[in-house]
Image 1 (tube, rainbow over the protein chains, first blue to last red):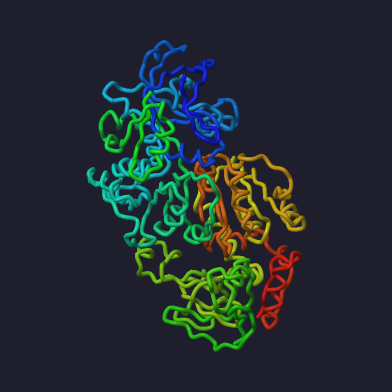
Image 2 (cartoon, rainbow over the protein chains, first blue to last red):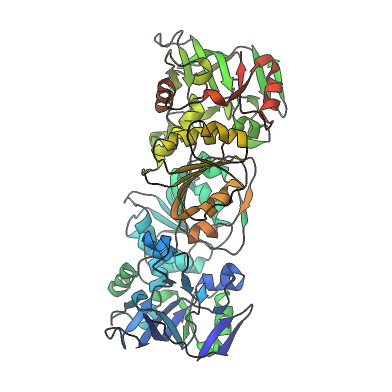
Length: 316
Length: 316
């Protein structure tokens, strides 16, 4: 099968079609999406070597569970051992021995086929198109936030970053509080949110310091956390979504003095994400700027780094 | 009056005795304690210039409230404006316009007299000696932690740092969970805790990674936070107590991936601290290694930096 492989550099190569292990399904990929994490991996994040990609929709070609056979599915990316102490604490997403699709110890979805545990799969409703279904994984990451913190309808929320994840977070949290502002640097990306009536601001506009109850840091850049510390009120909450490849200098005395709560946030629940896509309560189609074939996968990755691109789809 | 003044360097000088503003009391200091924050200020933390010192016990010499007149008191260090938006949110400790005794915009307690708002004062029970009462302020900072987080009796707690604050935190949290370990680098400081039956370990002993539910970072050094990130379990809590003078490089992707909660923690409630000192549920006397007169205040500060010193008292 063809696969977009990263081994210090990305290239499309031929690999044997994977064989599903016990409890796993073989999935034929239909479409996959490029995430900033893929680009960070190419800068060294996680030290991953293998097939990239973790946002996908596909069809189950082979599995033990006959109910799943032939179904169109999306898949959760963390594969747990279910035996380690962390799994026994019912934290399988944090399993010490986990593999993570296209990120850690497991080939990803920028390929014609992929394998995943059957229990990771979710059937996609017929009303959700392939390209929309690809957003399930990042949208689930947005739905992780209301799982982690209580959000009051009066909470003043600032989302830093109007990129792919920032936009999804803004849409999800806007259903919790209308007192929300998404701050970005690309005017045309902010326009996408404005069309959804979600308040936006350019990063260069002056802002009141210490006035947000909740700041979500989803800039994907080093400057996001210090900026979040400026904006959050004392005893407020910063949700950290950004994972970047290298350590950065921070003044940690600021969150101590202001007694800020900083919460790391990663993968989330697929069910509310699929529901939101099916019901149209979150709009994602306008984010897709390019659909590129897998054979041109290297060009797709390059395209994803360009400032006038947004969500890049890879189609198989 | 004599005062230990810091203006780039510390020296004992003569200053006019302060006049209490409306609502304030004039307090004659009996004893005061040196805190690591005083030493950090001398390295540039907070950019403070003035009389150092924020841990004290004294006698009210002059005030409007006749009930306080002549009473022996300790005092909360944050002086709020009670009118700004943060104060109106009932967060006076975080008042935007606050002054902080010996730390920010207000002369401190290493002096013969100090002024503080009457409402900041707490009367010391007769059974609590002067030198024990001086521990109220740092002990209140330890009692801040159970105000901020729920602690189960089964929670595995690690305290990083067996210094002055670390020891107080260990004693307070040990009443919540016996599954506690205080990790320090000075064997003789660990001995102080061992005498209280509190489990300790040397920092060089190997430790299981990712196995603590709660890690309190009270090392007062740059290395504490990365170490806390190693020890805390996924979705666990790090309480940050350390304030250091300069920014440091951290890899923030670790708390994101592990969805760690990081909570800044500063000043705490005086009432439970005074109660614990009065009832003897927290033991502090063994920490005092030196009592030095105010006129030798510069030597007291030097002594506080020496590895064989612990709590240094300044007496007036």
